[in-house]
Amino acid sequence: MCSVAVDRSADPQTAAGAAGADAAISRVLRWGVVTAGAIILIGVALFVAHAGMRAVLLSPEHLSGSSEQDPHALRVVLHELLPPQAAAVTDVGLLLLMATPVVSVAVAAVTFAARRDWLYLVLAGFVFTMLMVGFAVGRT
Image (cartoon, rainbow, N blue to C red):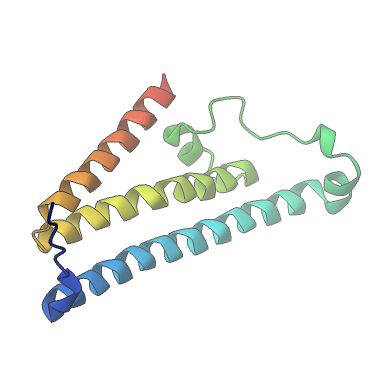
């Protein structure tokens, strides 16, 4: 049995395309997490400003969210942003944090399509489809 390994990194154009794709995916992940973290911190700061630090530190069992409704319903979260409620701001940050890997898979699929790397495009499409199915099943 003979196997031949093809080293795609030897081709400078392929290596440059892979580096560009890695950099794009890395930027999406980095900025998504940083932005989500900043939004979550703003929500926590709003909560502390509204409830006071003593309420947060001394009686956390009495803390509750502002919404009686489903917090992952985007319509409800956006409605509660005006005027900004701390729980809604935090929910937006958490939704952005959950959306970040999904967007990175979509960016990967686009870069694989641009590079005409059909195998990885199919794999990224499969992962993206599974994520969408998971979100759809999770909502029911």
